[in-house]
Image (cartoon, rainbow, N blue to C red; front, side):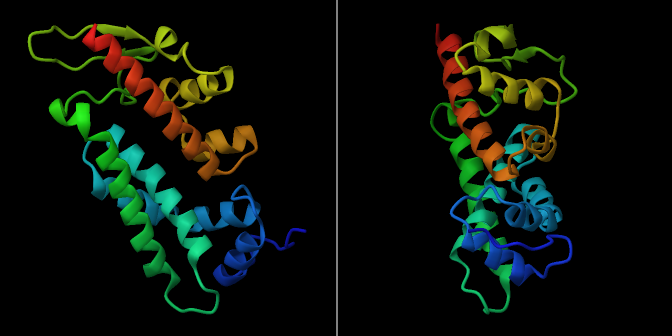
Length: 198
């Protein structure tokens, strides 16, 4: 049974209590907590990476860190904001590290998702040694995703919608969208890396 409260009128402790009382992270209380920490998430994302794509990964990581902090927090303990910031920074760093390791580490310019100012519908392979840059058709790349994942990918990477906007449109929480985007990003990265290797 859920805890009924008005997220806009509730204290942070009340929201944490309500979020912890639910098994799902897709609750009004968790959405209200994420909203209250939006500035912190943006700051952490912007200071974790200079590349737009990596800062988006860092923001997703920070959101997941906040959810973990809420789950791990002992109610009645002071200093939740600094406690949560440690979780958010750690998860943001982990998200950036995941995208800059292995194959990406060999070519840091191979950031696979387009910045908003790039032409919609086309992913560009950055200059690789001994290979000219070539456009990569977005529809062909996302065809490996489920229909729902394709929709989320188009909203995020072609339309440039924010995680919060996508979550509102789907009627789910921002952490749920972040998790979907993380899965999508990993699948797309492997598809593009295979195409580059071919």
